[in-house]
Amino acid sequence: MTAPTEGSGRAPLVPNARDFWGGLALVGIAALAFWGARDLPGGRGASFGPGTAPRLFAGLLGAAGALVAVLGLVSRERAPLGYTARAPLLILASVLVFAATIRPAGLLIATFVAVLVASAASAETRWREAVPWAAVLSGACALLFSLALKLPIPLLPGA
Image 1 (cartoon, helix red, strand yellow):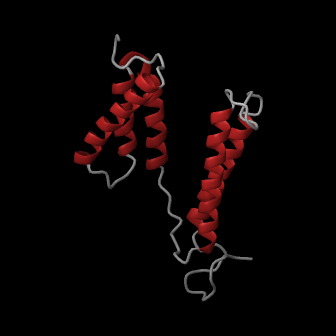
Image 2 (tube, one colour):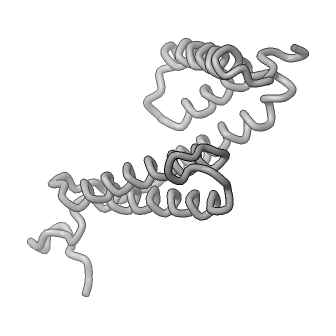
Image 3 (tube, one colour):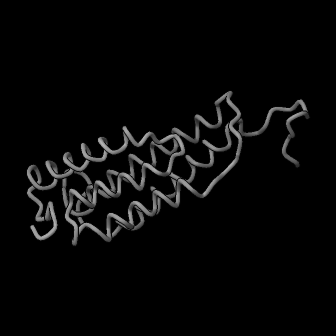
């Protein structure tokens, strides 16, 4: 069976295919995270352990993905299926930049640069807003990880 075309008069099987397939992709990533955390102790019932956070976040991601997929099925908006590699590549680059700079540059600088690289993923980015936002997120990460959680992550180079 062929997919209906724009002028065929028939409604498409999936009105918003971008949301539907994106939601299914998130559910797949969540399933992969559950599988990856299968041998970690904790996270089942009232017991906490190294497996608690991965399972919790995978569950939240899976639920959000299922919601997005369902909304893609019931949506009346027909989003085009166009795709560019810019956003996924720059988001991946931001994660890699963070991983490469966290030890030598410290948490503040690594977070700041990673947020700016991730901001470049959108063509709508306004740099006058992105730079202060990167500074705010860097400060929030420093407060959370160094002060609140007391993790031994250097804030600045050589610290």
